[in-house]
Image: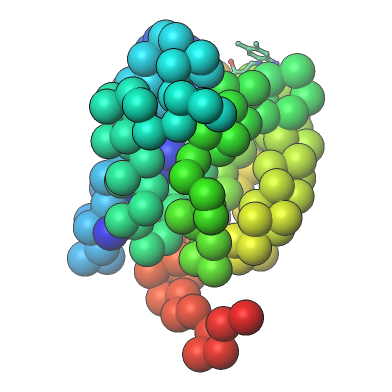
Length: 181
Ligand SMILES: Cc1cc2nc3c(=O)[nH]c(=O)nc-3n(C[C@H](O)[C@H](O)[C@H](O)COP(=O)(O)O)c2cc1C
């Protein structure tokens, strides 16, 4: 199973629409996926589910379980103030230890209303995944000017669709290295 993380808790997020599109791309390739929308996090999760309260919030436990069961990940990350949303870092900080993504693989998709398409957001987030010993696909998809390229839940940009399809192909085909250290 592939977990697709919609990387913000903002209501009616564009990221969730992109996550739904990705779910479709994976289904077309015969891969099972589940969307994990950070908007499903309880509002107080930073206080009720972290540190000394780890494991005590049943709603957060369910999401952490999904992260643990997943074999691969897709992170759909909107650009907020030149980086990724703080709620995504808090979610990562609340995951069980050792991190359930360790020695697995993640594909990164960035989006933003500006021209960068989340390039810095993906770069910052990739550093964290590297620290956690999570492999990332070299192809990181950047969806710039997202407001002009998305309508009715569909991306109307040939290059963007091509990049997303190529990344989905590579994610499904990815096999972990035989020797894990
Ligand atoms: C708090 C916040 C900060 C933002 N900062 C940036 C930014 O630095 N660069 C940019 O291009 N867009 C920025 N935006 C616009 C978002 O990238 C854009 O609206 C995107 O579609 C939001 O994704 P979402 O709908 O999944 O939240 C920001 C939006 C929010 C809510």
